[in-house]
Length: 360
Image (cartoon, rainbow, N blue to C red; front, side):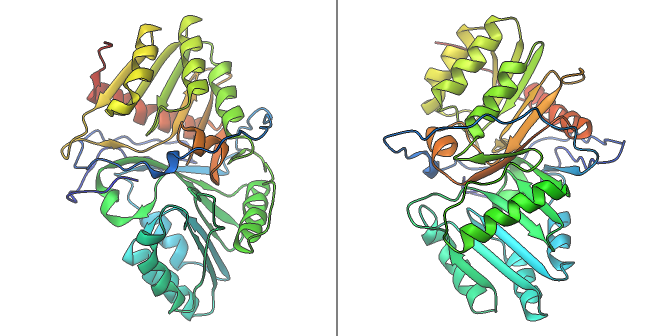
């Protein structure tokens, strides 16, 4: 996750969906600083992946927050409104409001459990770990040797928030991110079962729930299923373009006539992939790596928006070997129309606001 040099207020796009209406505010982007990408370390062999089933429509069980304009108020209210339990898995947690709310919950008798990444982010999470531990929160380091890049909050065993964002307050104002508020019972049960095992440092193959996308079990296959199913359009945002299989799938989609649009933040590390994409007919647009531009941290793929077979993937998974094959990650693949419409609208706005990449 990137480190902000300055914090400024942004008001790019706000969408709270789950009902019929979608509201859009297209103000200008705000500030950011270059991201570090510590989750890209790879291991020598890839585990077997499993293919997920066709996505469900969601039945109104999903709502979407589009950041930065939505803010984290809805997430804060879930924490402060907890009655019995709060479970939080977070790659990086440095938000004093959230930390104080978790401590307050624990003080009034809520069972608060937190898993923090230790593989790559222990130094940055240590102050938070110490604070929570001193305030009656049950906090543990994630199992050693695995990057826990997941960003998920579950409250009272009834509502989960599956996020692309880390809970780092200095990053909130200027980062494009999404958060899905999920009340689907099958999803919640799968998320809670996985959290329980991870908290106890026990092995588990995470259950799929209704529409969950986990790393390292099914994420690459699920994302490829969205890309490969596209017949007309694909809209993509991601922080990284480091997985050759995903790049090849986007190339293949463009060559079979799909209108493929990719929006990212400029990073020379991805230029080879960008060149391959553009030369195949993919429309790549980039925001500058600048303190005055929106930073694309979201991870989403929308296929055939507005059509009968439309679907979306959104989650914590970057397009990297580490993220797709080795980390603990969580996302959602769904045909929920309001969620698809909102994410597609955000990516379309970002595409218009960014500049086309010129292949070398």
